[in-house]
Amino acid sequence: MGYDGYMYESVWLHPETAAERGIEYGDIVKIYNERGTILAGAYVTQRVIPRVARIDHGARIDLMATDGEESTWIDRGGSNNLISPINVMSKNATGQCVSGYLCEIEKVEPNEMEEWRQQYPEAFARDYDPAYGTLFSGWVEEGGA
Image 1 (cartoon, one colour):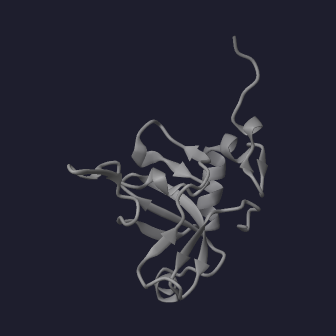
Image 2 (image 1 turned 60 degrees about the horizontal axis):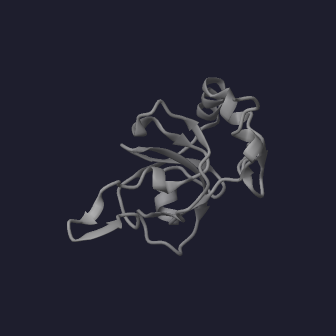
């Protein structure tokens, strides 16, 4: 659980990789590339090789921001599918390339998190349960047809 009470998906980092980036166990980190940004909790362990960030896929999506362009996505839920390549493996195989792609990782500083709170207050006000993530009532608005 992050210092803000949110249950982040964990990203495994080798101690050398974490140290190079000033990241410690439990820090909130952002993992990003040209396709967007996801947030995760740092799990520092020697069970991964240096210079690799390992995060399970299939996490919940909890978008903080998007203007329709993929590169502007910021996701608190840690869904790495949002930053994985969209192309298929080859013209002969239609599987996704989700097991290895380039990204960068940095520690999220408290002032950056506060800026996001100011910019996207609705994302931080959603109904949320640490065991389940964002609740249905956090996404659905009353009213309609």
